[in-house]
Structure formats: structure tokens, C-alpha cells
Amino acid sequence: MRKKQGLLIILDGLGDRPNKELNGMTPLESAKTPNLNFIASQGMCGNVYPISPGVRVGTDVGHLHIFGYDSNKVYPGRGPLEASSAGMELMPGDVAFRGNFGTIDDNYTVIDRRAGRIREGTKELAAAINGLVLSDGTKVLAKELTEHRVAIVLRNKDLSSKISCTDPGTAEEGKKLEMPRALDKSEAAERTARNLWEFTIRSYEILKEHPINKQRQAEGLYMANSVITRGAGQEKYIPSIKDTYKIKAACVAGDLTVGGIAELVGMDYFTHESFTGSFDTNLIGKANIAIKLLNEDKYDWVVMHVKATDLAGHDNLPLAKKEMIEKVDKIIGHILGEIDLNNCYISFTADHSTPCEARDHTGDGVPTIIAGGDVRKDGVTSAGESQFMKGSLNNLTANDIFMLQMDLLGFTEKVGA
Ligand SMILES: [Zn+2]
Image 1 (cartoon, rainbow, N blue to C red):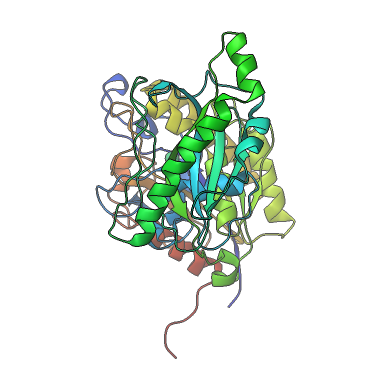
Image 2: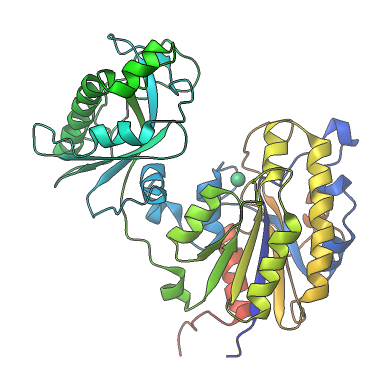
């Protein structure tokens, strides 16, 4: 079968609900989007569920589903993701955690969960606890990440990620670290919970005496005397998108979570310091990389991600969300001038809805388009959640949209003879 190329543009958290500030329209409905309207008219549209109706997802899980995966089967959790972004090589059976250097007192009460947003000295502090061996022989690996963040790995046979962690929650300071508990009845979970608590106690003993913390104390700064853990996860085997679909895929993004997920599934990740993951991101720079990757014929499928629409949703800024959509629409106009829709499909979606008035992710469907020369046309000619309810993709799922794209591109296998 003849292969074609595809470009997918993802606006993070794009989906919205009727908004008072926009006369009862959503930001997408209210935005001037001649180019999105054009691509809507050149294909199929609909509101698409990230997993299924009403299920709220995070950016990580939403992107896994956009990339064709079932997060229930493959998602290892945030701990392993952070560990690999710290450059740690995980082995099968390792349990990884997201950690914060935090400040606690002798009663394990949290005084500051980010150790005053410590920026310097975390490399030395992580080195001081890296290599610690616990009483049952479990080895601890620690590696600093940006600012107060640190990745922690427990390495031994028969460990489990089915445990609760020590983080008492983000709501407020003044709570005690929580004693880890097994979340199932397995011996491995009991043992891992005991290990995590032993690590918490012993790392406190080491860190509170560390010269960097003595210095911080002398300067009146919060000591980074503990590691507060969450996001336990265990390495799982994730089949690469290259192996499953024989497709060469790339992701252009500024957001590290999206970049991390893309790399996890075997896509090449392209970024630049001007891709800020915020309103001031370099949209034209992203578009030009995507165009180059397609036109140089290095990739079959290129994904371009824009984060700011999600930020506007969380901060309840409908006008800023609308403005960002209009900026992206102009960039789509630029892209349309550089690619040939007869050889390269263009698709458009979101990882979840972040309605401004909800200020959080919801389980609503997300506006989605698949367009190109020979794509069936469903008669929808303008972009918006309401308009897309009449579209042919309405109520499908992110996995369905992935499969439809792979089929158009010529990368699916026939079922049967
Ligand atoms: Zn998101």
C-alpha cells in the first residue's frame, strides 16, 4: 500500500464549555479561525474522548492514548518517567519515585515541601544518599533533577510499586510525612513499603548532617533534609511505535512531560530553548521544524504540541485561550502553504479538555479534525465544540483517531485474508 505522511497538531487542554465571558461560546467557537475552518471542511470532525466519556486524564495519559496506547496496560507511572528523564537506566523490577527535597523537623512534620525551592547543592545531596543499602539488601539510587526535584529508585528482587508514598499532599505544610502502606496483600508490597520508610528515616539522618545543609541553616535557609516521595511506579515493557506500526514518528514540543512520553514510545523528540511551554512559545519555530522533518522525508508522522491553551484553562483566562487559538490558526495557515494535502494529512486534537470555568481537566470530548486530499468530508465547515457534534468523528476515542490516521497513512495491517 502506498505510504503517505501525516502531521498532528495537539493543543493541550483545548476542549472547553460555554463561557460567560465569551457570550456563551467556547474559546474555540469564539476565536477567528479561518485556517482551522478550512481544514475542518477538508475532512472529518468531532469531539473525541481521551479514554471514554467522562474519564478525566492527565497530560501524560492523554498523550499515550493519542499515540495509540492503552495507559492501563503500558503506563509505568510518573516515578519511572522522572527517573529516565534524570538519565537513570532502570532495570526490570526497579521501583521508581518522584521525590522532592523538603524540610522536615524531628517529628517528620513537613515545614517546607520544596526546601525553599532549593536550586544549588542538590547534586551533592543526591550523591550523599545514592548507593545507600537498606537492611534487606535493597539498594537506593538517587539523582537530582531541576530545582528541588530528585528521582529515587529502589533496586532489588521482589519489590512492588503497589504502595502509598510519604508525601502527605500538596495542600499545606504542617502535616507529617505519611508512613508508606502496601496497597495490595502481596509480600513484595509490604516489603517495599518498609523499605521506603527505612530510606526516609536514614536519608534524613544523612541529609540533616550534610555540610550543605549546615551551611543553609547558618544562612537562615530551609534545610533540604528529607526526600518526600510520590508517584511509585515500576518499569514496564512498552512496545515502540516503530516496532508496532513500522512508522517513523517525531514530536516537536516544549513541554517536558509530552517530550518524555514521546520518547517513551519510541518517537524522536525535537525541542528548543525558545519552546517555553507557555504563552510566549516560539510557534513559528515549532512549525518550521515540523515542516522540515516532513519535507526532508525523514518522518512519516510528525506531532506538534502547544501547551499554553491548557495553562489558560487552569487559570480561567478564556480571552487568553481564544488568543492562543488564533495564533495557532495563523501558524496553521503558514503550514498549509508548505505542505501538500494530497501527500500529507493534517490532523488536529487535544489531550483533554481544560474548561476555563472548571479550572481543571474534565472528561468532555475534545475537538478533533482529520483532513487531507482523499479524506471523506462530513460537511462540517467551521471549528468548534458545538459544530463538531454534527461531525463524523463525534464520540470516538483518541485510540480510534490514532488508528484512522495510521490507516490513511498506510501503516495498518489487514485483518484476515
Ligand atoms: Zn494536558
